[in-house]
Length: 70
Image: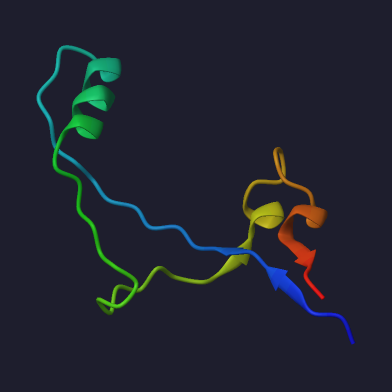
């Protein structure tokens, strides 16, 4: 029986408060700020896992979700 690597994704979100003159500057400042980070072993719940083709159907196909390795 063949073996496969299956690529799963999960999404986390946060809110970053910044002062800016407009929205574009606000986004730039948010990315330049110290963003929160939680490793996979920190007990941080990322929510439900899914495939890239389900989460991003505009750019991923079901064939992108796996590869046969053996």
